[in-house]
Amino acid sequence: MSTTIEPNNIVKSDNLGAVLDRALDAGEGLLRLTPTWVPRAFLHPGKRIKLAPGDWYAYGADRGGIDERWFASTTDAANDGRVWHEGQSFCTFEGQQFLLKDAVAEGQQRMVGQAMWDKYQRWPIYSKFFDNMGPIPHHMHQSFEHAKLTGQEGKPESYYFPPQYNNVDNNFAYTFMGLEPGTTKADVRRCLENWSQGDNGILDLSRAHRLKRGTGWLIPPGVLHAPGSLCTYEPQWGSDVFGMFQSIVEGREVPWSLLVKDVPEDKHQDLDFIIEQLDWDKNVDTHFKESNYLEPIVAAEGDGWVDLWIVYGTINDAQLFSAKELTLQPGAKCTVQDGAASGWITTQGRGRMGKLALQTPAMIHFGAETEDEVYITAEAATAGVEIENTGSEPLVGLRYFGPDVHENLPAVGDYKT
Image (cartoon, rainbow, N blue to C red; front, top):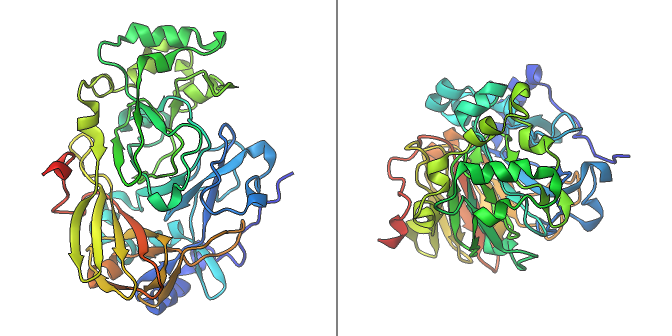
């Protein structure tokens, strides 16, 4: 039986206006967020995202272990048996909590900026820590075109491997990505035809890349990937669509239902349609790493601090999301002026952001509030946010951004120049 803790003192959307105004005024445009934990029934938690050991199965053993923490999310987790708010971030202010999703709908321009609100009427991206003991099945996320067939949106995503959350490799610190050049659709079809006969051999058609702390990758929709066991920070589009193409992983069966969960019902046995969801050219790219691999690039630096691009580049020529890593040495202070909203998670040290304290927890109990996560509204980002390291070790934070917000976004490969 589940022992989940429901958020207390929830402010409903129709009563949110006054509370949100007070919270934004008190925080000078900054909102404190509470931890958002997400379980996955088919995965084994990696145990590095600070959740207390007794709470790994807080949603109930039948729901699976908690292996993800989502940041500044207005996206629902597409899990069977989900609680009503699963995947959604809550803001907390003066003992009350309210959904970030409702705050965006209420605050609109103040929260995400006028251009983003006019185009999307929401905060259209999110990020997460993705933390597993071993690899997960070779899978892909549908394109916007294919996801639309089930009333959803596509899911391009990105990776960054924060050193602070990767003290150990766990079982398999390699990720299979794409397909070997020369692979044919007939090869993939045979793997699907052999689904119920044990390991369907899809990994024989792919290539693994060793994962390196402090680096990252872009993963376009329709590209197969089997993430390895480093804890991963993943800025991505606000969707939870996927299709698993591997029938067995680490001896565990992957049900056919996870291959077709976001496929129109009349196509659940249509192997040609399932394969057509793949972006074939990107999967068999002979220069896959060159097209998708990221290393940090300095965005700005000053006395005792440096701000790095860690996720950048475009996907299908569109700027969809990006991320930076800010590091301040003890006693250092800087003003960050991004001009666009972002979601912030502190990965090391303590300090302050504006009037809000920052503290990296050693352990978090399920349902507890922390001081490591902040939503930086468009209003605050445009005005500039002062961040100070008040501790004795580096203060490090990751923040991610939405679509079409940077005029100077680096391109994939620019780290070489």
